[in-house]
Image (cartoon, rainbow, N blue to C red; front, side, top):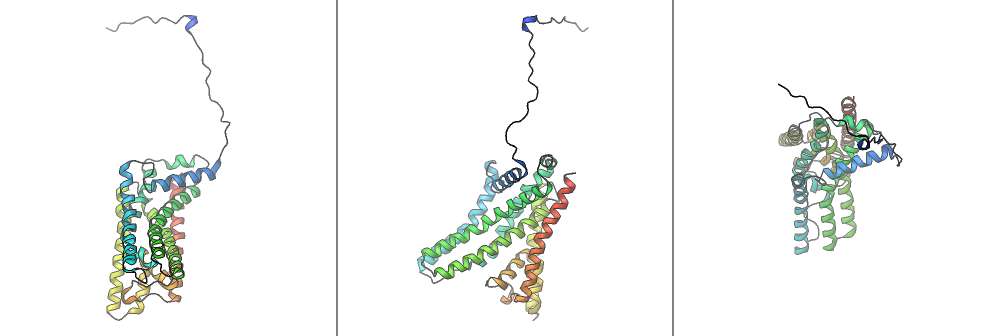
Length: 302
């Protein structure tokens, strides 16, 4: 049987009424631009695990080191042997290290967007002054900036080493500038493709696998078809086949306009006319990636 206990009301001198209520915010309202910059900064830091757990820092930092170590070794060899040039051109370095770059974008594109989808935080962003275009621009710019840091850092190592080895300043500066243009386009292209694929699924593991599959399978298939075409004497088809892989797109573009040597079979890079098609394809893919992200997040934010 339940026992009821009488409730004793507190005496009058113990009773207090606190009018804490809601108070208005009197500080500065920083608006959309500040929110967008904050999202960009947070996403860029997150691409290297900064501000996150130690476990989150391991892979991006390891890949950054892997990108820079070969450049440092090449510089050491050039200085020790008193070579007249670097072992590899600035424009060739990113193509040689494309597997590391693909792994980086595969690991960081889902980290940038899949978590927001999984935990359904995207509508919370849009409940503030930030809009869909601001969110997409911040995420796109952050990943592209992180990739530019990844790909430009070894070029800086090569350039500084070349100057220390007293190689020709004009030639090295020209090559360094061409290499920066190449990796800037590569960063924009890879970041767009990676974000589009990662935005399809809230599962980070699925996103990583999908990005790796798209990058590696497309490059392997295109390289195989180019080798077959070259072996059968259809060398004119080699540049056109290169339009169907992100890696070969950048390779063909820089060999057409940036003076780079082509990695295509038989070193048959696109001509200037074919190079225009490569430029249009790269810019078109970048624009299409941005457009697809906009459409995706307009639906998610509803």
